[in-house]
Image 1: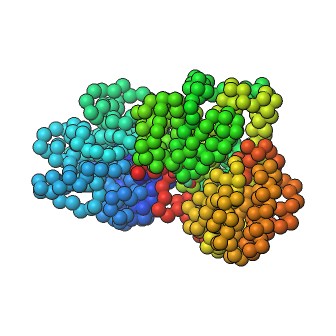
Image 2 (image 1 turned 90 degrees about the vertical axis):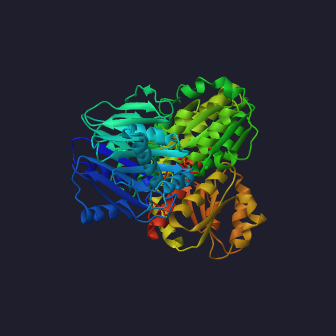
Length: 615
Ligand code: F6R
């Protein structure tokens, strides 16, 4: 978590860094800060709160002139989010200044050693320990900043992406990464440093993604030098051309990124299967699968590891894979999997799902699975992300940048990729007939238009949101493929509106949650016609007879439920296996509108961050 930005070149650095911080705010927004070198001195300003608060602070406190600056937007790990704990942090001499994303796990003994040597600390952060460790090495070993950073990092246990500069050498910024992302934008006589490429996309398309355990010296007017932190060997940096454009990372007229991203789903799903699925010809082509098909077909089982919304996509995939391919599937929270000493063999295939490609627990689960000899396949959205590089093979979801903290289009595109994989395997294994295969493909082909159609329920969902916006609890029920959608609907509501919500398999209701039902309880029921329909109708009756309020998501033309539910939201007819791609949409809209009506910060809900790079 945390976003870091830096600039060194011929422009005024502060506006570049400030705009970059606004784009990276999805990574954390507890506090923000900036350090600018004005030609003589470092000017530093930081504050608790958001980047807009920093903007005000900078105006009040410092001159913002200078062609070198670094900035930070924080998601607190060590020390509460207050002004002092905000980044950047000075070293004791005031000569070095650092920004850091990650955690230094052994900061306590390092801090004690530095205290013993006379260092003083203003903040509670691990970052202030690191910058003083670098200073200590620099002074004691009489080395340049780059070397000092390298020696210091070799003493550090944990994860980091850092940028540090020395006011006595204001022509360079030293950066390094281990476990947290860091990319260098390479322009004409100028360089940009950032946690992802969004801060510099209007200036350059050329970028160097640092690998783990690499550091770089970014020097004005010189080529970027990249080294291995451990053994000092030089690395030839690979300058990659980015596919991102500015439009993708702006709100484009929508009030919030979340709403924009909900509305992007028809396009995102289409982009995800475009070129991979040729419905008319009955072909699914996915390089990562085609090249490793035997591993999947011979697997004893498929293990899916993920967190949060990505875990929900994994649960949908469990139903889809088992039904289509008859390969046993288990879905695990990456955070549990990594610590519970799971049984993994070389005959297992592990699928890791992650929008950001940076989630620490998912990454650790991958490493564990690899160490036991399993083949690990990644489903990521962010191109070049750590998880996409750590896995043996993978398939990207082509959702485009997801900036709203609540995941929307990542979920539906993950389900799309996973469904394509399952269909491909089922075709190869012969577990579905050719005509079924063709039917799935042509239905999948129609999904973007059906998502578009589902989005026309927007105003109706808004009306429902207005009626239930003051509820204190919500229950979400679904069965089969739509049980994970119920979980996802509940997660969406609680994370952005702060209303308590729980998702359940509909039939489980009578084993406990039914006790919660009274006239105050809105229950969202996903009741598609082929998904154990009659049983779900009975569940709705049970809720109604206890005075609960029913908001039902039904297939177009459903009459039975219309007669008993308080409100119905229709989705177009499709194959049951593909319904999650449609039923999810109204649940996203419902949580969005409720959150807006409750005046919540939809894109940046409290206490959350977009990529969770800490345990
Ligand atoms: C919820 C949400 C989170 C993420 C989770 C995993 O809306 O966004 O639950 O799904 O933190 O993140 P990724 O997919 O980046 O690994």
